[in-house]
Length: 383
Image (tube, rainbow, N blue to C red):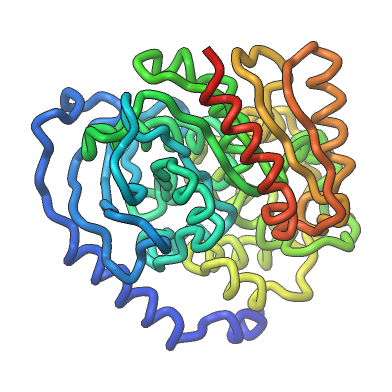
């Protein structure tokens, strides 16, 4: 079976990313700003320095690379890295309003982290920067920091998103207390979970709302169907995403014994998933179905409870409005799952805006930008 993975190694690409990671490490200075948070608290800056110039998003006036403390799976302390981008010009009274960006799935390995590859949102984030928002972009815990990245662990990703704002304000005092969460795909889940806890988790900040695009939801409700006979789906990347999810769960919850649910091929896939970024993994795992990963049904209450804790997006309890954008042609996050999320939120009386778009997964980012821009502008204007 090992031969099925040979196409995913790409030594030249891995060397380039490793070289990029070394450049980032060389640029990082271990200096603590005088106004950093007390040692040990979430949002505390551990190190900061200039981001490699080639990794700046277009039109940024300054960019910082930050390592900071956050909260990982199970509420345990963890480290995350991220980048801070400052708009051109003079900050308005009260400071630059902040957009905290959550990126989509890129992999589990440290070398996949956006601050290690320089793939930091490019033109899309520039559109926010040029509107006068500081953009802060977390890598999430475990990407560029110790441990396996817990992919789709909603709470830890949300904490990374919130604590990135805390850390960014410690590094650059021109940033406002006012902020919104913005994310796509995996980052859409992070933004939604952050929206449910931001005010209570970081009351010293002024959280204003969230935008979630292509939000993966209701996966926990499909988990009991997982097993050796699980059918192939007409979707993109599902085997990669499920392998990332199970690899993260295996690392953070060793008590569950995830390997006991896997076939020999499944264990091999998960081992490889820990070191392959998404493009490599997509090629390496092509032709392997979710069912081939599993040796038994995922219908045990222990693993189902753990998956629900990781994946579930709250459907009540939000204290600020939020925006959900969904591509009706999305082959990564199918629209019916998001429609159920919207229906559950509506049934619970939550204040939110839902917009469907005639687009696929990434195309939704472009088509939703005018609506998301209006939503964020109003969120910052609200009293």
